[in-house]
Length: 243
Image (cartoon, rainbow, N blue to C red; front, top):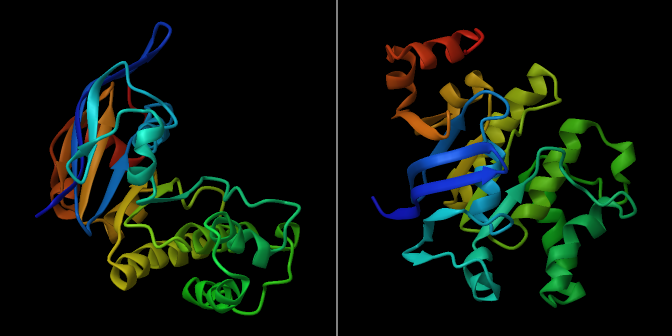
């Protein structure tokens, strides 16, 4: 399998708070990998390192064989990424059409092509005919679908999902799970899903990695995860407090 993202010996602290202490992780092309762990372990911080928002204290992140250097020369690498943020992060002042068109307009795509693409993107996320609606008129689940349509507008090779089922009901969460799998299968994307939702991870992941105390303490398939005898992993799966 081709390595899409390689994270080697990553260290990061905020003052006295250690976030990563030698984290290693490989993400393979076209897989869905779920990174699990309790709140505050640095799951979202890891995604921010992958897209250049945060710079590690030491260690490296390599994308398709090229290391991030955390300056303007990373721009070509970072175009490979699409991101679905935890809250959706739609622009409140723009309707659905303009939200999805936004990244395309930044790339100077013609309005004629945008007019063709936006309905198709909405169809992919199961939201036909809502172009004129404002974000405030949409449920949390539909906002996330629109945000996903915007994220895939640039045809990313790698999609990062930050807690995609947070704040939605179980039925909506189930549909988002199916949507993540659909995106990978339809567009051959590599998918990195940060979550504390074990049902999501066990249902859609090719591999699961658990982040705890600054490192990845376990990697395996959903079946291997369910059968893992590590006490920390077992406690997390069971929804028990981890000390």
